[in-house]
Every structure is written in C-alpha cells, then in structure tokens.
Length: 338
Ligand code: A2P
Image (cartoon, rainbow, N blue to C red; front, top):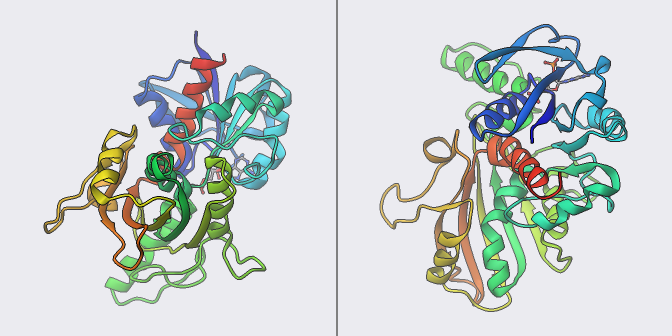
C-alpha cells in the first residue's frame, strides 16, 4: 500500500529535512505534494531523483493527500490542519498548536506509540517539542525501571530550531564580527554569535519561557504521569544543528550509573557514548548533527543526592527533534492503522 503525502512548509528547515527523511527511510509514498507560501510556490525540490514543484498551500485540495506533515508554524497549522483533517487527511503536526489538547495524541514513537490510536478522534497527531523528544527518549527506560520523581534540565539549543532566518542571522553575525563589522539582531532579541541567550520562545506570566513550560507540560502528557516534576532552563547557543541537554533526575528508587547505562544501551533510538577520557562524550556538531539517534553520555550518580542521576543528552533537533520523529509517527500509523 502506498500513500499520498503532503509536506506543509516544505521549503523550511524542517520541511526540507522531511523530504530527505521520507526518501532515506523509504516511506511508502505514492505522490508527494510540497506546499509552502505563495512566496516560494513555483520553486522545486528533489525527491527520489525527481523534481517536484512547490505549490501554494492556500490553493491545495487536501482530499488528494492521505497524510499531511505540517511544519510551517503554529498559525498556519491552526488554520489549515483542521481543514486538512476534515478532508480526510491525517495530520502529523510539528507545531505546538495542538499539543496540549486532550483530544489529540502527543507522540514519541519510542515512548508512547499506543497514543497514536487516538488520532481517530480528530485526524490530528501532535509531534512534541524538540527538547522534550530527546530528553524523554533518554529517560523512558529509566522511568520504567525505577520511576522518575523530578527532572532538572538545562538545554543548549541550536538555532535551526528557530528556522532558516535564524541560521542566516548566526552566520551573518559571525562573519561580520570576524571582519570587525557592525551586526544586527532581527530574529533574536540579543546577539547570538559568540553568545548564549537564556530565552527560547516568549515569556509567560510565571517568569518561565514558553519553551521551558513546553518541557513541563509535554513530559507529563507523553509519559502519562502527572506526578513527574520538571524544572527547566532553556538556552539558545550559537550552534547550527543539534540540541544538548544537561539532565539531572531524582528517581523513586536509587539506580546506579552502571544499571542506567545498561538500560540505555538496550533502548531503541539511543546510542550511549560514555568513556571517561578526553572527548569520550557526544557533542552536537561531532556526533548528532545529521543523525537520527539520541546520544547519551556523562552518565553518573549525583554526589549531592542519594537518588540522583546525571546525563548529557544530545540529538539533531531538526531530525529526531522534528522531521524524523514525524516520519516515525507516520510509519506507526501506516503499519498499525491504515
Ligand atoms: P516559504 O518558503 O514560502 O516562506 P522555517 O521554519 O525554516 O522558517 O520555514 C517555515 C516554512 O513555513 C517555510 O516552508 C515557509 O514557506 C512556510 N510558510 C510560512 N508562512 C507560510 C504561509 N503563510 N503559507 C504557507 N507556508 C508558509
């Protein structure tokens, strides 16, 4: 069986990666539709050696598509995903717009694939936030074994998560500063080149940023456990691809670093890189960028807490954090339901 697939936001950082991932994983695509705004309609992208023209989303008839992979921003999903769903197209939405709706599943295939069944209610499945996805892939086997009470996490997030204009801003600022020229910040509120910004997404009333609260809300929903406490700080760093996270957990029962390593080694989607030597850990640029696994290193017991464990978790935010996770959801959907 083959499926007609529409990519909404096909010219963006995630959309272009969706095209690559569908091809690499040999997803059973019949016709691929590439959709974006009228600005890039008429340009083209290559899929399986053939050139496909980008069409204007506003004029697309979603009855033609079995599956829609949406990654063009929350307001576009708000308007078009329900229309697509009503036309019979099953939407996998990469924005935060539907993630907290009780009637829509929020899925990481390694963690809660059973939740996909709920798609039948609305024809919409939400893809989680990039930082949450990689953290939960690493924490799921530990939660299943000993129970996690609390997660303290600080992220170090790449600019590709903001989209192409942010990648251009980092490149332009870096080049300008190296040439002693003045810089402009348009995408980010402060200079991102050679700097670190403790703000991702907008500020909320409680003083946390929305990115931080996404990690709190989504962890509870995906793990199916409202008792897990999450204390996040989300930070943007001048890296193009790959989010890193320092994750500190407190478990119900003590778990040794050896046992955690054994569980992580056996868990699908995880690669442990943890040697106690110079460079014996994963980094965004040297390990995760362009790859699908979640890399885990620096696994060690918390010397300040009897049931604490520390981990360093790295993944490509555009791949496992967005495109690959969406395609994996679509794979589960066609395998188990269509
Ligand atoms: P376009 O190239 O036409 O602007 P990124 O996250 O990398 O910035 O990408 C955003 C994606 O969302 C792009 O593919 C962009 O297409 C698409 N997009 C933005 N606004 C719209 C819109 N109004 N209608 C359809 N697609 C849009």
